[in-house]
Image 1 (cartoon, rainbow, N blue to C red):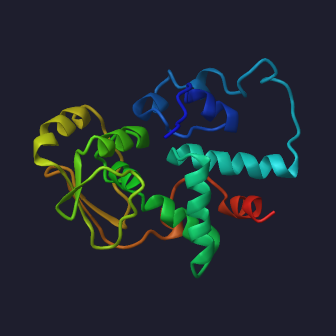
Image 2 (cartoon, rainbow, N blue to C red):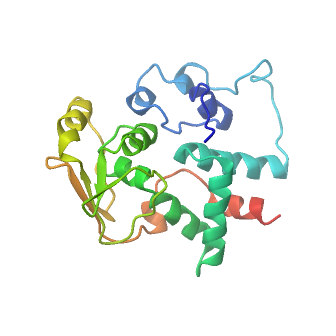
Length: 206
């Protein structure tokens, strides 16, 4: 499967805000936004007025890069949200939050979503007692997430020097035992991803 392998700091500069793609580096003075808070490229410091299409595209790219998803999977997730009942934008963010790699990150078992995705790919996590290696696996309320016993020491050593934020209220995390539980589906107010989902809905509905 293809994936983006370029410098992720350029993505933050392209949308003009921190997407926290490199974990602790994003909160340090080394962050690219702190050094060069303008768009990458030769004309990055020029003034550009965005079209209506460009505004919506930028919002879509911001969400896609934040969760680390390629366009085809991102569009498929939106299609699932559009078929569901209720507000499409809120449902879309809910489905993105329920991805296993995102849940591992939210539980505090990884310093970034990219690291969480790598941990899941390498089989370091179990869902309801069964090893899971699919980052896009959609978890449900009541699911139990735990680190594979053989990987516990490795994950703890990775995280022990990092002060990670608390997990959101829709998750129950035990970082000492490296276990977590999905309490319920997330509400829109509990998703701190800085995107305007209405613009994404308008982008795909054009």
